[in-house]
Image (cartoon, rainbow, N blue to C red):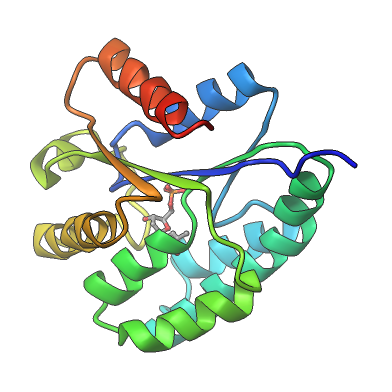
Amino acid sequence: MSTPGRFLVFEGIDGCGKSTQVARVAQQRGAIATHEMGGTPLGAELRQLILGSGDAPVPMAEALMIAADRAQHIAAVIEPALSIGTDVISDRHVASTIAYQGYGRGLPLEDLLILIDLATNGRRPDLTVLLDVPVSVSLTRRGKNPDRMEQQDAEFFERVREGYLAQAKADPATWVVIDAQLPLGEVTRLVDQALKERGL
Ligand code: TMP
């Protein structure tokens, strides 16, 4: 029997450099690189409904659609890979829901935890790497056509960042916080060091 794969997640507010690290770490390990929302064909449609310019979902509708995206992603991409010993590196996962829908939108965390458990069947990342940047830096790195979430104000993103830092503080065994304002080479070194230190 093969050893189950490792499940590593990169998190942070927009412009923190997650995608660069996800692609790099996945290539380095021969792992699958994936993302939430939109890591499956169904998820891509849900992502468009959630972030596009159509009828704006109320916060709970948004959370439920995100849970649907995640349930599909877990069942169709993440679990099949882990079960055959392939590592999975995901750009965002459950911590985004606590940070954005909980701290950002103000939904009760206990409700979100129920949705997360239903969607993931209890699967949790082996490590979540938070690439932390101040909101002011994130705002300057933003693209020209902000989606529905990116159109939120700076206070929203301050709460999201606080939500990430609170999760990291509460669970140091499975989280690492890296200052993503450091030069890219240094961020890369710290990511690799964190994985090595944890035997991942
Ligand atoms: P991305 O631009 O990193 O692909 O993420 C798309 C947006 O989706 C981003 O603004 C964060 C948001 N999001 C949530 O609000 N909750 C979630 O659970 C996830 C996975 C993403």
